[in-house]
Image (cartoon, rainbow, N blue to C red; front, side, top):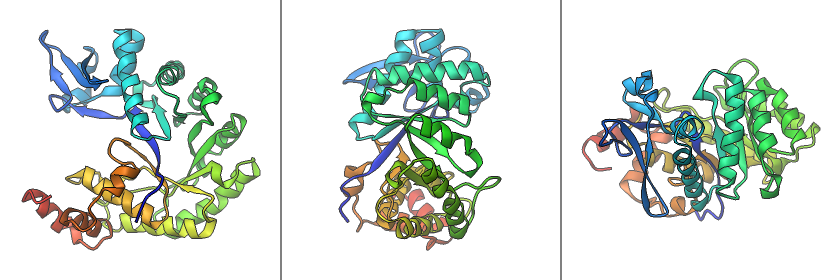
Length: 336
């Protein structure tokens, strides 16, 4: 299978994203505090971690929300350090082929007015670094509106992440700003478990989108990915849903999803995610909400489908490896 195009919605500028304290990226500094270490244009850079973050429950659990640190610094501390970090993330994702850059500030605080302002600031900061269109991601309509108002239409239509039967008000907002949409298969009150439930929800949602002026190419369906660690059939159900959507709606519609959700709780998540993305494309998907540095068309085309690692991950994802024991054993033995 040759993948010509993969629509990567870059997920890295997101306040839920965490690094491990004293891991690969978060290091102690000479002053006894901590910094987030990264590279920008080949240069080693540091983003200081404010004392406020070192007093959080996340920090006590050994993790820190690195994008939240950058946004805090950009607005309340070392402004240039915060801006440079976010713009480096944006440039890296754009260089890796991201079609959109997803921006989410929901977990920065509980203050709606603050998050509205920070969404606008973050979108402006990212747009100053790259020409890639922005995907505005929030559970709050006021924050979605703030992001869309800030998007530069000259770089292409923005994206709304997401609309669904339970978020019908976001449909009108997306239409007003001429955005494309990620259309979730979620129901009004619950998440679908089966292929049939997903299709039934989409059968109600897509006509509603079309009635508001959205054509099929404006719609990026998210069939919803659930972890295989909780149910070994979740990967197979998702792939079957993708195939059914492609059969029903043809080549015009896009199919994307938060593909890394499938590997929560499992070892060697990068391998699982890449093989799952490959299987999703094989089933009919043409993109995903992913880290484009780890999942893009070139990476997927370079996967060795005859390797033991690919075959073990594939069996795991298709529910052929009961409880994932073969995959987990191979990880423990260092074979993959």
